[in-house]
Structure formats: C-alpha cells, structure tokens
Length: 424
Image 1 (cartoon, rainbow, N blue to C red):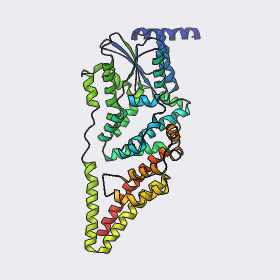
Image 2 (image 1 turned 135 degrees about the vertical axis):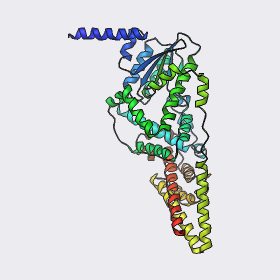
Image 3 (image 1 turned 60 degrees about the horizontal axis):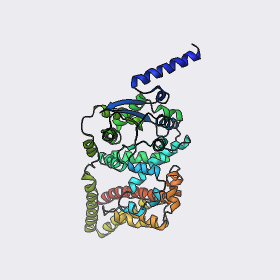
Image 4 (image 1 turned 90 degrees about the vertical axis):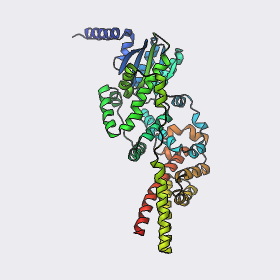
C-alpha cells in the first residue's frame, strides 16, 4: 500500500476515534499513543491521562493538550506540599533540622529524600527533571489562565497511613527497599520507562506487588485512586459542561477511572475518611518497655546471684549496645563527638523508650556540623549520588540518625540474648 494511502487511513482512524470520544481530531495526535480514558460525570467531561513521571514524551503530551485550548481546567497528581516543593526552590533553606529531629520526623524526611533522589537519578539519565509533566501542566495552565486543581492526598498523611497499616516485617521490608534504592546503580532504558505506561503491563506489575504487601498497595495506590477521584468530583461539581484534563501517574489510571465512574458516596465524605490517621497499634509502644523490664530484671537477678555476674551483664550491655551504635555513626562518617555520644548514649537511651540513640546522635551531629544554606540548596541534587549523602551535611545528619538507630536496635537484641545466655 502506498505511504500516502497509509497516512490517510491513519488520519481517518484518529478522526473517527476523536469523533467517538467527542474530542476534536486535533487532540488525537497527542492522545493516540498514550494511556487515557474519558469519563463524563455530573455534566463534566474528564480526560484522565496516565503519565510516567520521568518521561520526556509525557511532558510533551501535557504541553500539547493544554495548548490545544480545549480544556477549561487542569488537575494534577500533587498535594499542596509536593506542589510547593516543585515551585519553591528555597523551601529547604527554611527547614529547621533541629525541630524535625526533636519532633521525630527525621525518618519521614529521610524516606522522602530517598524516594525523590531515586526518581531524580532516573530522570538524569534522560536529561529531564523529575515531575516534568507536572511542571509543564502548571506552567501551561498559568499561561492559559486555567484553574489548577491539586487532587492528591497530602504526602505526610499517606506516609502515616502506610506506616500504621504495616506490621513489623513489612515495615522492615519497606526500609530495606528504601535503603537498597540508595545503593542501587541500575540504569533503566528510556524505552522501558515508556512501556510502563501500557495498561496491561502496569496492572500485572501491581498485581504482583499487591500479593507481596496488600496493606502497602492499599495505602499507596487504592486509597489514593479513590481520594483523587473524589477530589475531582468535589472541585468540579458546580460546573456543567466543563472540560477537565486530569494528569496522573499511569499506575492510578484504571483504579481512579473506576471510582470516578462508579462511586456513589459524597466526595467530601470520602476525602474526610481517607485523611484520618488510624490509631497506632499498642504493641510497638509496649514491646520497648517489655525489653527494658527484661534487661533490668536480668541485671537485678545477676547482682542477686553474684555481684561479679551483675557487673559482667552491665558491661555486656554497655559494650555491645554502645559499640554497634557507634559503628553506625562511623559508617555515616559522623563527627568524633557524635561517635562518642553514640558510644555513651546508646546503652542509656536503649533503656528509655521515650528517646532514641539516633535522635541524640543526630542532634549532636547537627550541632557540631551545622548545615549551611548551600547544603539545603543542593540537598535534592546531592542525594541522587551515593557520595552526596556523606558530602551534604543535612543528608549526613539523617544518615547518622538512621544508622546509629539501626546499630543501637541490633545491639539491644544481641546484648539481650547474651545476657540471657549468661544468666542461664
């Protein structure tokens, strides 16, 4: 068949598809190779576009669709806090690291940095900023004076619900995965990134993920599908005949479209329910006190049996707990004063569940090596490289927190078993 005939048939097919969906044929060159769905709900037409967050093509498609002039509003998979991260480059400079550590939020900040660093490292391979399609949407919406709707659930709320939904081993798996992503140097072909937008492949990948951790899948994916669909309905329920372009990660496409079409509950009620923080399990609070009770009881029994045995038990506890916490600080290349604080403080803090060795070490590290403005300015770039975690003072302080905490936790169990063996 002649090339001109093939091209005409292709254009005719696109035009027919556009007519079927109710969209002008000019939109189809942008939508034709993308995962997308059209949903009409309560008089509003939603074009739900699935994107890859490190895909150059996704950013181009978003720009082209908004420039077409067909849409009256743009919705994006961002919450206000993540939107601020993309728009306010100086936000990190105002971060109070001491307050974060004292409030117990160092772990959350560390997890956020690991995730963003991993995504940014992938994006660097393709010469594109992570979240480029979201930036393109924000910029194009501003240029065309279109309302910008932030429909994702707050990141902090999602992380808390994820954490509360997981048991001990799943939490350990999550932390292990985050840590592995820091050390991983695997490269991903851009063609593979584009293939991630094929619906069947994505659904298969998520099905396997759900089998491994249904609770994690529920909090990270399913709940956010439902939440974003509810926010779309709430933000557009008073505007009949409105054309809305909703830009989300491709992994949310099928689930979100299903909720957008079929959900009958009031959107505000859904949002309120999905932003509640589940009550914490009592066991994580009880277990540390049980360990303290067992260790102190061991000391008492040791001294009652033989003072020398009692002092040996105390020595075992101090040496093992302190040395392993200090080893964690050494791996993080902490200041000598921080290492000393880990060595001395870990055996004490391990007997006081209200304060952790990691918190003490991180506060000392931040005090002796105060992060400067440049550390905060380059933080998100530095964490994309393994060496950057030790070079940047903010990132290194968080490493000190994590590794000294792990060292003290391991030391608690190792020393505890050693004490039991000596008593036996």
